[in-house]
Image 1 (cartoon, rainbow, N blue to C red):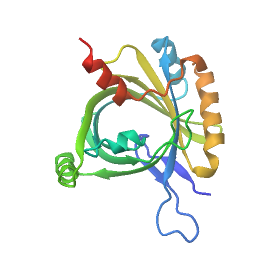
Image 2: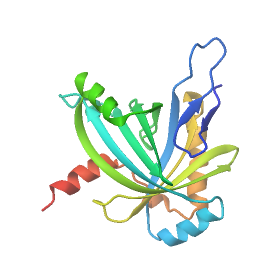
Image 3: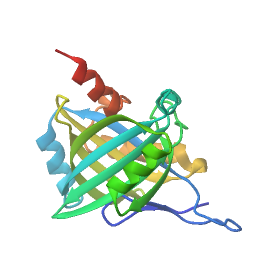
Length: 212
């Protein structure tokens, strides 16, 4: 079984190499997302678990000209993260969901040094911009049920309200148990399952921008 962890700031994913494998296994982001009814109460509970780190994510999502990545549930994203006067840029490819109820996907991610250069490379290879958006996040990293957990409280300028995402990294054999642990953390945070959502920020932002 691969051992999957988050890095020290909860953004880069790493999965251990299995016996006889020549490279790291794809990790699966076992994640649940929900709308938050009382953001301040949520922050109070999260601060009992960890210190929050404020970050701004600037995301560009790409697609094939025919829209096939989005249609098939795949994602190609270039993300710049600004925190405490520093910037980190990550290139991420997500495969189609392995769990329809949560939308959890296998993920391949690496840090890159120059977002403009990567953008040019992707466009030269035929990718087109799907949507660009900004997320204002507070990240809380802690351990529960023997797993590294990342809880992120999110606001997006174009969207009403506040969201929370709780995730842990796992592998194909452990998706069910990982999601069960994430649900338990959501319950501990006072999140009602009725507030869970699988709507993607990309779709919500695109829709919001079409409104008069």
